[in-house]
Length: 375
Image (cartoon, rainbow, N blue to C red; front, side):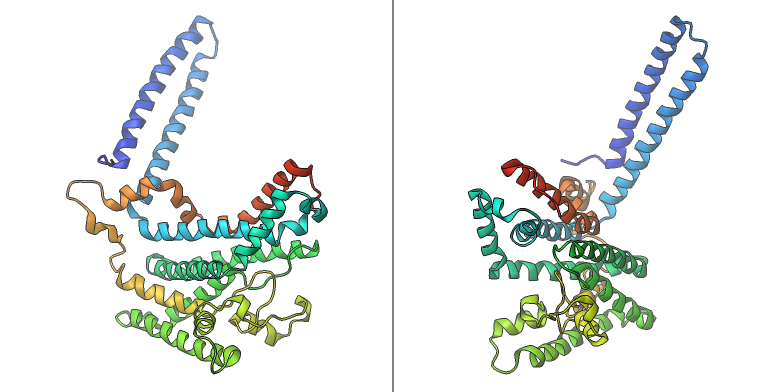
């Protein structure tokens, strides 16, 4: 299917473009001379420069894409894309149940059988164990992938800063909504949990990575200690002896918000101790919440996996490569490119999907019962 090298194929297309441009310029020159245009040279030069710039942009884009399809590890992008795609579906259903009814006229909402039935079914999903399991798996996979990418990244501090900026933007969005009576303030959204967990990793990396041979084992040991310590804290803080095994497992390894005590206060009433509890994961607060722990443990575990399984920084698909053919990693990157978009732009999608959903909901409600008011 992909026997030809991507860049070579694009260079052939570029040669065709150049021939077309040259032919067009000759015809354009003849046309200008027929019209006795006094600015033949100037117009030809401008047109030629325009075509030259187009050719340069085409080649530059092809080179960037070529680097991506060759070097990006397909399975990492694929799993990340799967998590983000699943999140989009999950949040759409959850918003339909929790967010959208608070924006629109509830009387009109309940007067429509389609929307009211959808609301009921969304409630069944949001309260189901299936949703919590899917959420649990998604959070773990994304945290592990962030940890794996610490092995590929040249600057983990920069990645940490980018995540923190995105998380802050999300918190600002929630704060604006809270002032309008929709949703509420949030401190620890999932991106913030990842950002702070990666920050802890960066501190450890700064302190211990000079021990190069032992660094991966330090990561594994830190992950194990994190899970054991957090398990002890959660078991004694929330569950106690005799707690059901499934509750114990989720509280330790997922810290699901439904199993954590909620602080019933405004953001201005939070004490310093409350902030620490919310950030660490002992107490929950806000419309969206998840604590740093046990996320930080998955980051370190992912780093260990990256340093062992991906020690050569190459896709595991290389074991399926055939001599003289395009690599399997490149084939898969090109074949699944539209789906991998979700994995390449994770943070941006996370930030903008809620505003987009709100606009879509506004349109849908307008089709059923006229343009609804917003805020």
